[in-house]
Image (cartoon, one colour):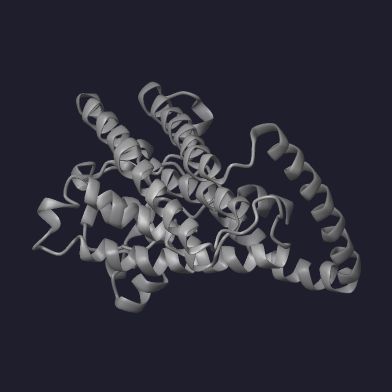
Length: 299
């Protein structure tokens, strides 16, 4: 059995571990649920204390936190992770990372990097930042922002996160597919597909309208719908940023589904529009992908 485990590839091991989660939950968590509940309560109290101390240090002005805080954080996250992937791609270092590369024959066109970098920076400063400012003032006008100093309960956090994932999939699938329509594709989404084999930094390589509708809306529309707390928004946008970087990176190294779906979409253009895949399955827009060799290697 030990030998069988050692001979399994990383995808099979990940799938096997995922299969054990329900069993572990039944055998360990349920019999001790009261202890788990007490543990979460104590953890919540400690997190609340740390949260208040952090706000005492950085300030609790909601405009600064929602606009400058979230944008600054995602900016640093996007460029630090994106540049790390780019360095690995251009220098073939570190060697261990190459084992997780799913685009073994792709070479980055360095002549196009200037256009990519300037386009992404434009979208971050002149699309994302104004979008977050307008969104914040709308929420402030409606008076729906939760108290910044009181963290949400763990149960509410889980429910909101599930809704955010669902809205991202639904809105993301239909807006993405819309921008592939022949009447508007040339003027909107075609720029993004110039990278037929994408890299992490190409995730935001879009025209401004395309970036607003296809990238920002699916990731953020669930936040006002759920009246998400700033803490939840911060974790969600961190997760969403890392996910889109992973999807476009060509490396299956982060704890997300394999980027082979996104690679196949950039290769064929008419398949795999969604983030997770259920709507692709429902609408039959992953038929070629499932029939391909890439599908059998996808977690």
